[in-house]
Length: 342
Image (cartoon, rainbow, N blue to C red; front, top):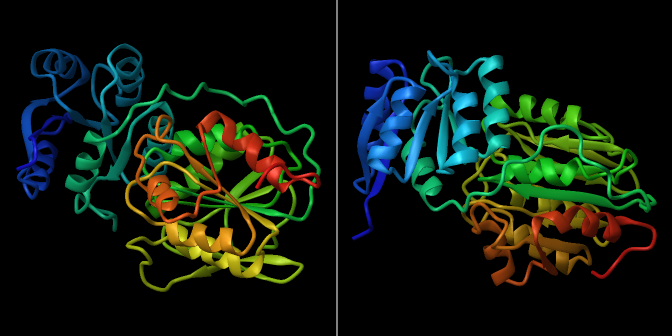
């Protein structure tokens, strides 16, 4: 029998707390050990109950969830799953929370969102997370000043913990970075906010991918949360969006992206698999490596969840396994006119 995972539920609405608790009951290993209506109560409950995971509302009295999360990550790091309203403001704050160190986020029921269907699974994954220091705000210094475009494309896949990781990678890219395509497991509600956040922090232009968009230097394309992002073409590569079913259990799928890059770009590509639960992207990264692409996997010590990178490594898809701070430079080197080791 698995060890019990102790959960603290924090939300100012008693009705919402009841819904969250009901959603967590589907997993017998999740034990709700306490509730709190605001961050002040939550602080006392964390000290008294020592939970393994906290579900945290974003908008609460006395102190908003984002401010509380920042203090929590700085003073007493603990895995947190943010519970957000499915509004633009809620999405923007959720992405900021993920940047600060929240493990995952989920939308509140209603408005066509996924509701709490996946909440128990997200809390279980959060309990396994290896917490990382929060990303520093503001634009990172570029480390790719010597990069010279070679016509190569960079493809990145990420899941749990991926927002922090993507910020660290993309903010280190120069303004003339290789065309970069990204699949991050994230609900549709939040992908536009993530693209906007990356665009503000980074030298390259970052946007949600659109059907037929041509891949160009200095542009980063993020898969929308409800479509598979693939690339197609010969000398000129373009984004294509697919509404086919889940692949490797996900939509968008990293395997879908990496497989298309292997087929369309071959050796003119660099594949990067970052932190995440499960094995989506492993087979696709292997296909890229077999097609001659350089492939990089995030190492265990810097992954929030070492699932996807581990799966890719174990089947031979990872050419180089690197700590997160080294990945941007390695990807740029491999995509440069004078590429580094592949």
